[in-house]
Length: 63
Image 1 (tube, one colour):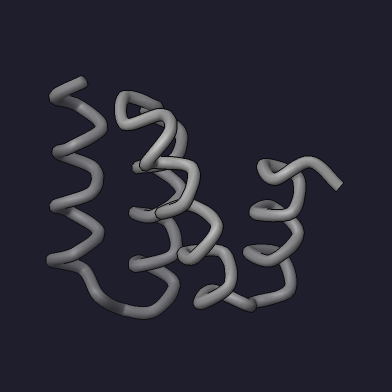
Image 2 (tube, helix red, strand yellow; image 1 turned 45 degrees about the vertical axis):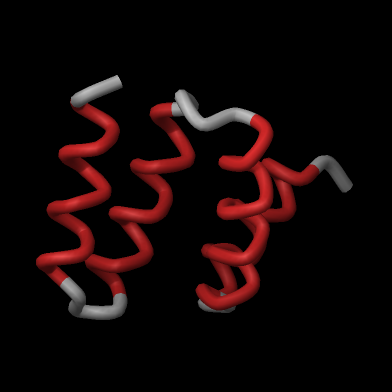
């Protein structure tokens, strides 16, 4: 399974830790990928970490 598809799969089933692990590994290769930061923001919203979500969303906007 492609990494991005696996990220979506993990998010859909609520495995946020695995999704974040995959996202951070992809960010090392693609540090300017807006969608990865938006995925992180979405996960943080689901986990009720609104400050982290805001930070990730701002990072996406700054790209």
